[in-house]
Image (tube, rainbow, N blue to C red; front, side):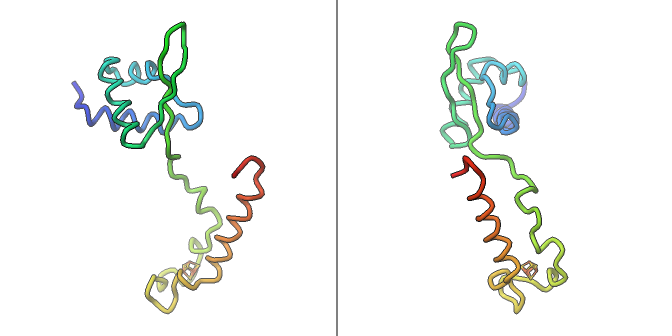
Length: 125
Ligand code: SF4
């Protein structure tokens, strides 16, 4: 029988991959081969830790919960076109050196452009 912390970790991984769709609590426990009682406890624990949110949903005439991740999985898309990836100074670059991300114009320009791109996406806050 898997330990509860293992199940908690597996549940969080599974929920994180569902993104905006979320997953019905009952489907998740079937997937993880856990009992509904154990599953409910884990879902509440993950919610209390701030990792997921639960929303009540009527499914097949019964109330259940749909579980959504609160944090998106990290994606390399977030560093797409970052100048550091192809920078010839990257070996010498450091927080306290002469070459530093603290004063790098290329990095600053890239970050500012990201903000402008994000603002121009319809529906994004
Ligand atoms: S912060 Fe600037 S200098 Fe440093 S690695 Fe990135 S692009 Fe190069």
